[in-house]
Image 1 (cartoon, helix red, strand yellow):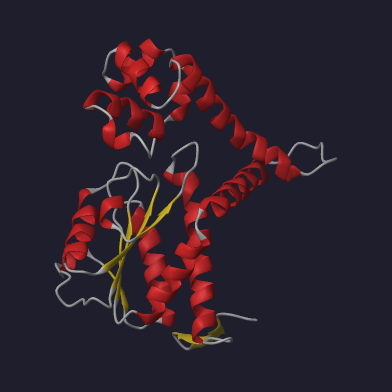
Image 2: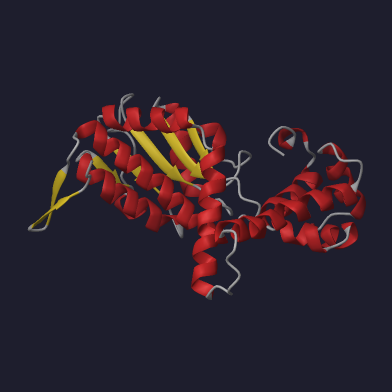
Amino acid sequence: MEKHYGELTKGMKKVADLLLSNPTAIAAHSARKVGELAEVSETMVVRLAVALGYQGYSELQQAVRQAVYNIYTDIHELKGEGQTEELHYFQQMMRADQANIERVSQSISPEDLDKAVQLLDNADQIVVAGVHFSFSMAHWFAFSLGLLKPQCRLYRPEDQIHLNHLTGESVLIVFSFYRYALEPLWIAEEAKQKGITVIAFTDSRTAPIVPHADIVFSLELPIRSIIQMSPVIFSIMNSIIMELAKHNDQNVKMTEGHHIRKFYTQ
């Protein structure tokens, strides 16, 4: 998908977007039904399969089914050999999160993580932006980074503060997930034009934020659900925070109200 997305026609991109956002629809339905869901013809669905290198829709469908099935396989593998008792639903969900975190940890570039930590450590100013569901992620990350880097702040649309005060040594962190709100894209585009480094968290290498970002952390999960992605995103953010803390001090202490807490312990 990453390799061929830019070459697809408008109709094929509709099917591709459906595949990325709801792969179970591809796994469960015929090409005709998928065409109806994507508001294109059945022929267009078949054309997408061929464009992606498959011999036809049935071969694409089988690949998608396998990808979706792998999620549940990972959960069972995490249960461990010899464990046969039925897990409580909260245990099942937490182990699904474990599987997703493990899957993404193997696909994210360690070099990109190291580079992001270095950029944040050297930044004169940091702005973190996210809207709608992503706002909670942006808020947590801005708060946590702010404990280490006082020059970090959360972007708030109501403040009407633009990026004019940022420099080439500044960093903008943007969260952008399907259905891709426009404001984070505009902010990233403006930052890129000003020579500001952009770090993006998103759900696909074909996401519209990608051309505007210098470093992209893409969560390549078979099912693109923001609910399922949240634990993975927070895990990545926490890893960055921990490494940044090590860069600043082996034992970083910070004040929150009147309480001093040890943030990092060797």
